[in-house]
Image (cartoon, rainbow, N blue to C red):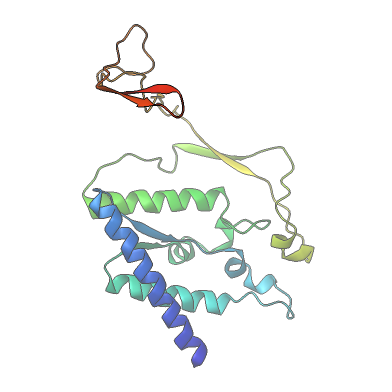
Length: 212
């Protein structure tokens, strides 16, 4: 149909743009992954009344077309819809009051990314495994968005959840600029000397610029 042809064309254009992102990342020594996460309309398609369109079928067709284009261009991607379905279904990972995943979905997406990086790039990065953290509800009322609660047409209240590791995650803050031209010094040390390479006179502004 004409709709499918248009969808395939849009998928080709998107795949080309994502391939350009992947190429740019590779030039800087990085890697690029496209991570596709199902949104609320797909997870709660059957909760929509007959007079509202969730476009769930369109979303699935669009993703399939895009994934095919990414495979042709050898762009790495992660299909979270398939992964979440294999883990028991989309709803347990999706927010009911907003258009994104809940904390369980956020964790599974993080886990999928880490697994892919380790497997595809031959890395051995540590990440939080099940049993190393707890997910608990925040007591504050979580309002979300009325329009994203399918216009309050059904009871879709939920709590906001946070993830807390059992063991404290090591963390240290470094400043990107230490205030010195000595790369061996970290933080904001005192009593250092900045090397001035040249001076430039800005007569119109009335000051001298020091070039370091």
